[in-house]
Length: 146
Image (cartoon, rainbow, N blue to C red; front, side):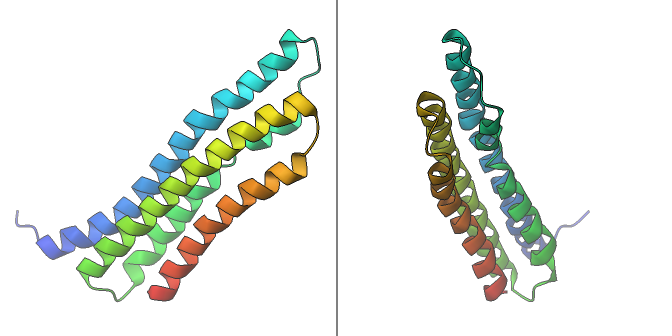
């Protein structure tokens, strides 16, 4: 069986975008999941009620895998050459990956801060939302480049 190297590069870019986005979401859960659990533990140790609302901080990175999937669906329909697809796919996937990890770090700190003070929930979400916006921009710019 003979493989076309250019077709392989094309699919590495397309699949790499989704794969890196998924890795970012998974790494993000590795940061913010234990932080939320630890925040709840603090409440239990102090005999305070554990706020269920901080579950939101635990799931903030999940949207990044959706952005990778959107690009996974759209990139094969583009008229870009294989080198452009490789670069655009891996670049955008890496961007989404890094943003997911950054977002998770913010979420971990937010969960701890909210449990400690009981205040600032909306403000914490705004910072996490700024990181989310960077992922959205990455997807939007890739779509514009296609």
